[in-house]
Length: 490
Image (tube, rainbow, N blue to C red; front, side, top):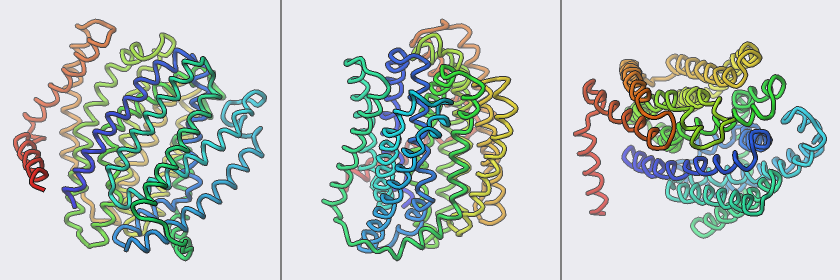
């Protein structure tokens, strides 16, 4: 199972690299077409569409991942059908409420009503499409179907780029872009439904499972609300203390930092919850500990040096992919990337709490982090604007990680290798000092100079990993060859 986990992670890693090319293509096009102001308007809608599922799902998606692996396919189909029906009805009710209170929602998102109210109905439709997509993808996560998840993710990214090209060709505005994206999402929903129908089929819903999922998920509701606050609270303060143009600048830098860090953490993390659940349900605790150590180590080895590189190259990245008005957001990229690394590491410890049905404590850690974020935003945003917002987000996610780690140490047997973590941090700092010198030598702008700095960081990190004996390259190459040869023999 551990081997299959890392094969799936490798497939998802390749997918993430391809998919994360989307923002690198889309951001230059959108920033030049919309400008900072309209990009800010669009990004506020995107944030709502991304974060509303955390509230609407009521934690039941976590229950699906927790309880379905290892059960019969027939039972899975009955319970999943019931979950989909219940979730769809609830989502439609929430979306109707959003439309009815369009004035309040407009004021919340953009700081004013009037012209922005026209976005609310399509915002509700986008939220409905996002919920359905998230629910359907959960089925494939339960079945460890990384190929379908990868194919669909690439399809989504491709359709997203097509909608942007249509907007540019027809010289249309933000409103039309959102409508085209909704249409693309519903095409994805149809594709996933047909995929499930052809391979597994559907069964009559068995609603007896819903109470079990709600009992598991209800303690996680504060978790979902707090995660929403962690991701979106800074936008509330920026709406009050900054301009929509600054929110646009912040959103671009936020998107780049998030996209890059996702390349390193999401492929490894995506298959961890259900794989860990399967190992725990089979009482394979030693293998679960090995999976935890290897997956977290892989994330740290790739992500921490990358964050240092992003800090040094942030303004260069924005100079290449956006216009001059966005460059001030350079430092935000690395800070947001660091924040989401803290977040993913915290989730690893939260999963260990979920496995022993102590999901309340994972909610507690996120709620406390949300409180930290609130006060950090109060202190930092009025004085430092978008940089303050980024720092507040990173500090809050760091608090979440520390609290989750402490709780996991109290209630579970998961062990953390702090010496390995210290080595990675030291290596990354040394590497950062080295490439800082390189950045002072090469030209201040241009893709070639950026690539030179990045490659020097990669080479320097590899040498330092070898010197400090962090990565056994001979063993890694041997295992890679063995897996390739084994696959050829199948």
